Amino acid sequence: MKTKLFSTLVCVACALFSLQLAAQPTPTADGLWLADDGEHINCHGGNIIRLSDGVYYWYGEHRVQNIPGTTEDGISLYTSTDLKTWHNEGLVLKASADTLSDIALGCIMERPKVVYNEKTGKYVMLFHLELKGKGYAAARVAFAVADNPKGPFTFLRSLRPNPGKWPADFKKADKKTAKAQNPSDYSKWWTPEWRVAIEKGMFLNRDFEGGQMSRDMTVYIDDDGTAYHIFSSEDNLTLHLAELTDDYLDYTGRYWRIAPCGQNEAPTLFKKDGTYWLITSGCTGWAPNEARMFKASKITGPWEQVACPSRGEGAKTTFGGQGTYVMSDPARPGEFIFMADIWTPKQLSHSRHLWIPIKFENGAPVLEVQK
Ligand code: DGJ
Image (tube, rainbow, N blue to C red; front, side):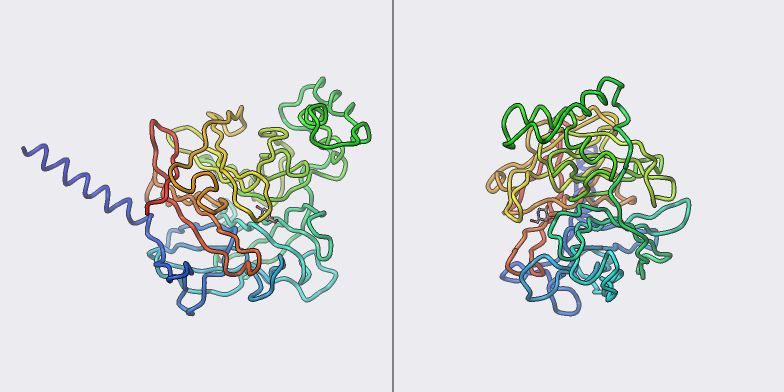
């Protein structure tokens, strides 16, 4: 009897405990999440980190209000101590008024991720940058840094990662094969032969000198403090996982390809009980699609694709959302929230937020939205 009572109390305590990280704002009737300024939280494609001051810092794209289109005027920050109520801290990085800057107003700044570097004591931001007036052609990553989590962040530079470098696991023969693939040999995309050429590194070779394309992205810090930038590369066909230097401000030159020609966007990565999990989306612009999932016992792979984690009504479209980050809290190991955006392309600033506490079934992540 005593044992039963004890285990019931433990279960209740666990439930209350896990409810903390699962807390989220109460939506309005039309699904908006209002901050303390009375406005919808304009913070998209971003991430949340909890720092030792007990505060959650939520960084994201600040979409220009009421203007259809993709332009941002900067990166927003909202703060909270309970994940339910949020304070608008304003822009921590502003698009520049200097028309010659890489981040000139009118550029596209997507999917920012901020991480704390224990060694340097700096806050480092990486984001997907598209140069003003060039649509999505530039495919660059940008770096910014701050001394304080509330910024201001200083823009450092933008680039295409790993010029002149082959993937770390490429042998001599793989390099030779990649170099032999020539885009002009294929008048049509998506044929079986073209797919094989992509898998063999046709676009990797095409972009070898200038650096690899970098669009949708996340950053993951492993237990040993090593940071990895995971991004859609090779024209959104193949994911790259690239190791960052100790200060998180550059690349070591070591990188690995994941799911060549698999067309994955919106990567989110986390680790549970020694297994790395990667949840991605397909490539359908702003429209939602079915999430994909991969697992690995080493972050550098090999990565194995496993069943889609979503369950129940809405699973085929990830409940209308597209992932952006898997939030964890150092004080609550083993608990994870899948953060997603429900994009509203006609007014991106009002894209809705969707946070799903990750359940585990037989050790594998499961996403389910409770009605
Ligand atoms: C899907 C990406 O995941 C978004 O971040 C954004 O780049 C849109 N495509 C643009 O169509």
